[in-house]
Length: 339
Image 1: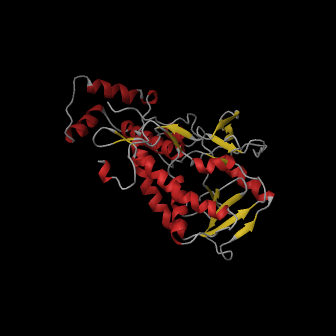
Image 2: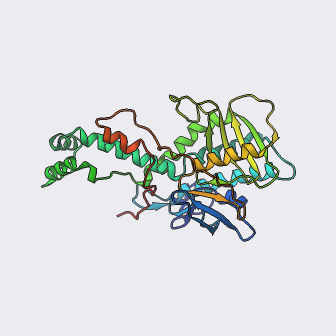
């Protein structure tokens, strides 16, 4: 019911719209006077320019199917609210009065934007899809048609004629199938991931690096986690990272760290660190890198691609090899109209 929706306006007004995976107000920082932004396609290296209304966007990316089997736009409208509250904080921090570090509710607003940015993109959605594929594959690889039908029957599902033969064909030809999840699964986890990240972000020390000129690029996954001295057994995550990097504009980099290196403040950046940051942003990008037109900060050598997650054990080397490598197909499930 619209009357129950806590935000102003129609909660379904974003259905059918292009949803920005990176906030449009941030991409504006990298655009020129015509609102054009330079784009590099990570997989191919192809370069082109586009209007920021199209950059980092996909139609109905956050539209979900509700329990009433109808399409809903609540998630996109909620993200717009998060972006609106954080945009004024960023503009005040980068403006003439340099309101940094943010205080109180302003700090919460910016931390909330970062928390959702870590969870809202195609990388997270593809990771969930591959994890679902892995779980299904493990289940089918260790089952028989009879055991699967018994399990379905225990859950109240009726066996149709030919189900047993279909399951046998699936198990015997598992490599010919791919398993995925509906975008609802990703949209439903965003809030949980963001709420878990929020207290960790608030506990870190905040610094803003000013490079004095256009020095930074950005990408479709602009929150970078960094370890000072990673070991081969270390798992990189928000709880283990030494620093978090989030470019706010081509000139300013927000750095959060768990180390106390003095009062939270604005610090000068240097071009050596800018090159390191840009390299990591390119490595972190999922499909696209964004730059200010006329300013090329792509590394001379592309970073090594990493798997979205790693599997330590399994029933066969083939299953391990399927996931312990970068995805060859980066496309994620698209929203489809409910049947």
